Length: 232
Length: 200
Image 1 (cartoon, each protein chain N blue to C red):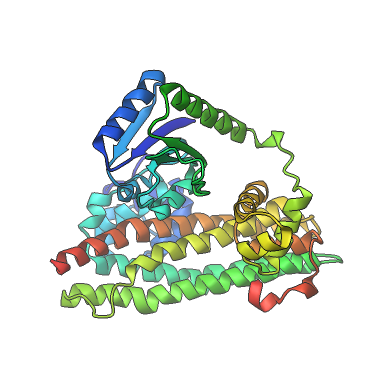
Image 2 (image 1 turned 90 degrees about the horizontal axis):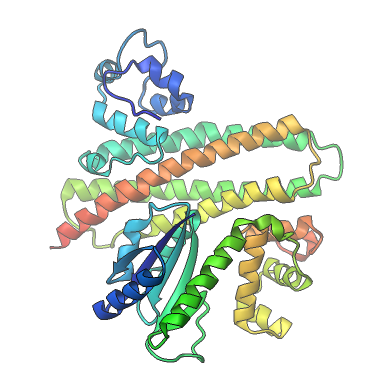
């Protein structure tokens, strides 16, 4: 897909890729753009246009990864964005997915023990994901912000290394959940209910992957380099 | 699928030599690295068959390898300095030692390519678990470690690991709790046998 540029209309962003709806919301941008360009809307909202473009293009084209550009942004900007994304997951996506799963459960006529196991597994996944988000929000992000503010290494050591591993564990559970449903669960439920749940889950997976990509490849790379410099 | 070959070895002589032999027989792209640390920079590769020839006694950077496994078919070849029939390291899918003849190297690559082709047609394999694999899943779900499973079934720990690998490939499920759910859904195990709080 063609990349977005500053002079493109903000409305064309959504008509070309509606998956960006929640992404622009995270920047505080709402619909009703009239004929304004991306740069104009960003200026109005006091958003760094290059940063905005880098993010929406990352979500739009998987092969696009403006590492060099990203690396020039302040980590404060990145962390702000990532925190907003976490809030969106916690307050909106996860409750929504759970609601859809409940509908699937309700649609099961009888002998729902397998579906109940899926539900238990989902709960396990959710609590692990929440724990991971909490760790980032409460420990990792403050650690990074503090690092850049004071420009000294913390005596307690770095929080950075654990994160990538954590991502892998959470990703594995989500992919297991999908495979259990798609390949192994006998279909004892109403199809439309399951389709809605599964679609939401798969979409969430995509979003999480982009999110983890930004954290692992941009934020963490940046911080590790900064830590190295400080050690010198 | 595109093939990517990596040779990771501290010795430049070995890197260049092996690369020369491989290039002579096969038209393949070969990347030579001094240290497995540098594998991390290739995390962006996807949809390839990746053949990694790694110096067996050096640090392997398993984290980067796991990352590559997510989007690629990865095949690990351990490169040994000595004839090492007794050093079976389960990390590696294949082994190669520095005295291997060019023919042996050529054969190895052929074997790797054929196994790669097999994986492309998963439909040929009906994906049914063998009864042994079912026993292994059951014990995993009960929370046993590899060593305990090996003792219980009178098999070696390597065999347990290879069963686990096959199970994950057949079912598409990696985590212990995911396998537990599978075991219960398929009546390999009764829900009463496990502590759901702990495992799921």
